[in-house]
Image (tube, rainbow, N blue to C red; front, side):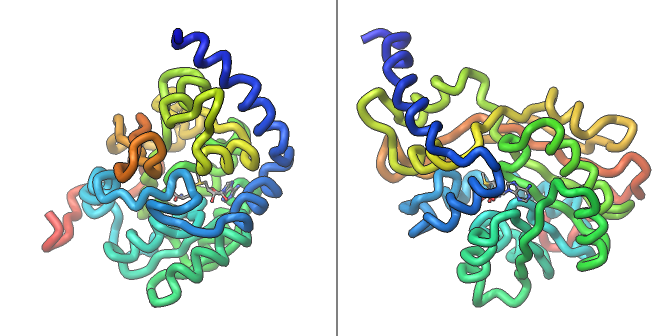
Amino acid sequence: MSKLWDRMRLVPTVVRLASRAPRNPHAAWERYWTGVQSTGLDGDVLWDSDSRAERSQYADMVLAHFDPALPVIDIGCGNGSYTRWLATLFPKVLGVDVSAGAVARASLEARDLQSCSFTVLDATKAGAGDLLVDQVGPANVFVRGVFHVLKPGKQAAMAANMKAAVGSAGRVFLAETNFPGNSLDYLAGLGATGDHVPSQLQRALENLPRPGRFGARERRSVFPAADWRVIADGPVNIDVVPMAQAGQPQRVPGYFALLAGANAEHHETLQREGHR
Ligand SMILES: C[S@@+](CC[C@H](N)C(=O)[O-])C[C@H]1O[C@@H](n2cnc3c(N)ncnc32)[C@H](O)[C@@H]1O
C-alpha cells in the first residue's frame, strides 16, 4: 500500500476524533487532564515519557545557566514530571498550569517533595508574569511542550509574561516539538493508521487543540531580538511514550532555546560546583 494511500485513510479518523475536542482550549485541557487515569511510561499521557535520555539533553544547560539562588517556574507543568525532575537540581520549583485537574494530579504525584509547589494560572493572561513575581520573586523559567499548542498571539502573550517573571537575573529554557512534516506524517510516525490509533494519541486528538511546530523561526517572532538575547538554541529530541514499538519512548524532532532578557545581567560564567 502506498504512503499516500496510508495517509488518505487516516484523514476521516483524524477528522472524526478532532471533531469531539472542545473549542475553548482551557476547557479542552481541563477535560483532558480530568480524564487521565495513569501517567508515566505506561500511562495515558502522550508526552509523559519519563525519559532520562531527553532530560540529559537539558541538564547541563539549566545547571550552567539557571542561577540556583532563584526559584524555577515550570510553566504548563501538566502532571509535574519535569517539575519533579527540576526539584532534583534546584532548591525551589513552582509548577504552573491552566488546568486545575493537571495541578491536582501534579500535587499528588509530588506529595513527598517539600521543594515543589503548584498553582493554577493561565500563563498567557495579561499580568500573569507580575503575579508570579509577587508570588516567588524573579525566577528562572522552564517550559516543555507548551508553545507549540498555543496560537501565535497567545505565544507572544506568554513570552511577555516570562519577560516579567525572569527580570534581569533569570533565564528561560524552552523545549518544543518541531516536527518537519505535515500533521498526517506526524501521526503516522507515532503509529496511527486508518485502522488503529494508539490510545494516548487518540486521547490527545479527541480532546486537545491541534499542535503546531515551534522552531527557530517561531521563536524569533515570539521572543524578538529587541527584548531577548539567545544564549543557545538548536535541535533536541522530545520523547513520547512507547506506542509503535513496546518499551522504548518514541522520538519527535524538537527545538530548544536558552534565553535571557535583552538587558539582563550577564552571569553566564556562573558555574555550579559539583555539577560540571
Ligand atoms: C503538552 S502538555 C506539556 C506538559 C509538561 N510541560 C510536560 O512536558 O510534561 C502542555 C501543558 O500546558 C498546559 N497549558 C496549556 N495552555 C496553558 C496556559 N495558557 N497557561 C498555562 N498552562 C497551559 C496544559 O494544561 C498542559 O498541561
